Image (spheres, rainbow, N blue to C red):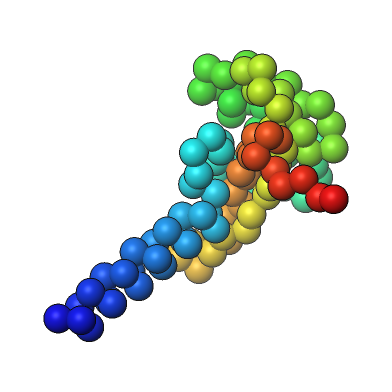
Amino acid sequence: MMNVLIAILAAGAALFGFNMLMGYRKGNITLDLDQRHQDLRKQAEDVTKELEKQGKEAAYKGNGFYVIDGIDYAVRPQNVSMGGAALQRTVLIPVSKLKKRP
C-alpha cells in the first residue's frame, strides 16, 4: 500500500515538474510557431502576428520584451524534441513574475 502511495506522489511530482519546465504556468502565454527562428526580430514578428490572430493586442518593445494587452512580458524561447523533430516553443512570462536579482 505504501509503495502505491509513493508511486502516485512521484508521478504527480514528475507531472508538476514537467508542466513547470514546459512553461504551463498561470499567466504565461505559450506559443508553438510553425518554423524555427535564429533571428530575434523575425521571431518577434511571428509571435506578434500569432498573438494578434488570437485577438490580443501585442507590441514588441525590443530585446525580448513585449506588451500584450497592457501587460509587460519577457520571452523565453525553448527547443523541445517532439517525435524526433525539434519544435521551437516560445513562452512569454509576465515581467512581474520574473525573479528580481539583488
